[in-house]
Length: 417
Picture 1 (spheres, rainbow, N blue to C red):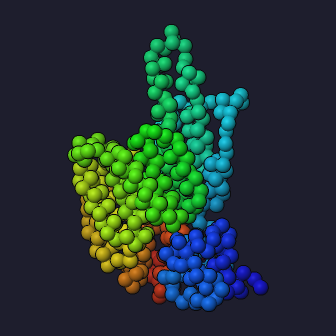
Picture 2 (picture 1 turned 90 degrees about the horizontal axis):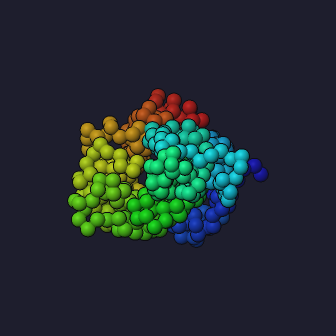
Picture 3 (picture 1 turned 180 degrees about the horizontal axis):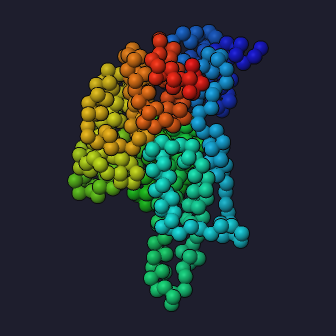
């Protein structure tokens, strides 16, 4: 029997095993019991609801068409790029100063590379970022591995250099944390949650005892744990990191520190939403909103884009995950009227539009869902063409009824028509 001829439940079991998940792990991701998963895989329980099929596909990081037997999934934009990043993360360099290896880059040059990587991520140029990351990971690791005394030049020729190099370990640690963070973030986008968790864990290890650096590292950790279906763990990690850097009087905290604090609270709120904990979602978002008013819009401290508009967009995403689609749609229509909306990075706006498309689907407005997806693709094509959640949403719109010309073109371009 070919794969396409297998019952849906058998295909679910095959993909679960391929993803190295137990029935309990898959059940936890779905908020179901292990018995429910077992019945699905044995064909005792029929998958007759598109929403349930879509949730299963998202948990298994496949297109719903694969579970329905429509063939192998089309490429999602990662491909060899993800494999190269995975190989870079799997490389353990115990002799960074070995002869024949390229020298560690200057801190200033490395900082420019990291900034370029973040801008590439924010504009959702994911294939380009994947090509950059293996080399950037190696550069950042080598720079951080160089001991201060190794990098000091002769004092009599440059008496300022030893003092500047004394601070270099702190600078390179901060940069390496950011490299691991952007690596983890893009891997979460592409549905590679296990590898994203590895990168985030590396960031936490490098951050060590520095509270602010550790808080920055906790941002991708929360994202990765949430992508793995570990919402409670994501909440615990992000809230603990937030408490560690929270100033006694929020009004007196530096904007950069407040931006990281607020971003952690947003990540905790999203994690709470995946657990169905509406009360915690509201409390965490309200706390983040108060901090955002102190920071204001139009900043990008520590590459967070944190501000009042970001908080409002997170309210939309959280409402979608809680199943309150009407609330999500209402808040979206208010948020996009904000002046800051158009100033957000293209990737951020496109990701929000994908969330809104999901909300429109839940309220049964296929036309609005289609418009949101087309606008997202126009804003940042790789956000719709590389992310599994976006592809799943496009499939649901296409199958929900006659698709508009824009949605049909998008589905055809992705091989989903």
